[in-house]
Length: 354
Image (cartoon, helix red, strand yellow):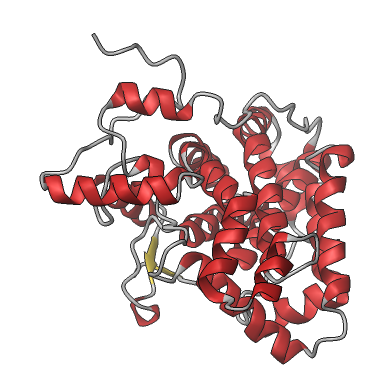
């Protein structure tokens, strides 16, 4: 008899297997070489028992203590902090904008990220990761912003968009062992976008809706929707946006993005990238050593993003409970001075559905 799932991470209804035995054989061979990548393991899972064994000792910590809003003012502070955190994180995992490149080099990006996360996550849990970001910034401080942007974007492409192993196939359907892109999970996520009033910008290409950068941007959009609804005095719409946040975090993001972030951050992956693209021994050793390279930005950001999502699991519940009991008028008054974030210079993918 299959084992009974113990928690949300073991309940995965998307585990499938291959019709083509040769395809299964190919993935088994890849696993021998890239055993350190969760997503490669996921592509080799045959049934739910194997899935349960895979996630054992890998599950994200969803028992983090959330920040508690006690009144309208503290609620607004936390809602804005959550929105800003999602915005800064999604900027890091999509195509690098000129503004982001300049902000990283100046340290402004780290200040914005720390300001947002510091209202949600205890400082002692963040410090190590921000120190890593600061070491990264110092290593590239003398590089011109245009060149830095090209270098960092090339590294992002190498990690997520390349088709030469090793790389990260950053799709929920892959990480949850559906064995394909544009499957059931992809359709689920696309429907959630539509229900919230969003479509993907077709001029940006035909991306699978369950890609990591898109899910991160969507979470940011839901926070913006909530804030704008409170400002407009629409309590029902604001609570609906909160319910959508909870559903998306609990039923999608938390179930796979922490594993993706682990893959990005693992030392073996850094070495694998070096062996793929850096021919001479010196460059490979540079990647293996403590010397900072472009990929260390993504490694530090992956650890921060995972920690944030772990807190978000209970934080969104805390926000929903508080909002249900707070005065809509008081919240609207507190939100009145909160401006929308200008995303015009960023690499965004969402449009309002007509």
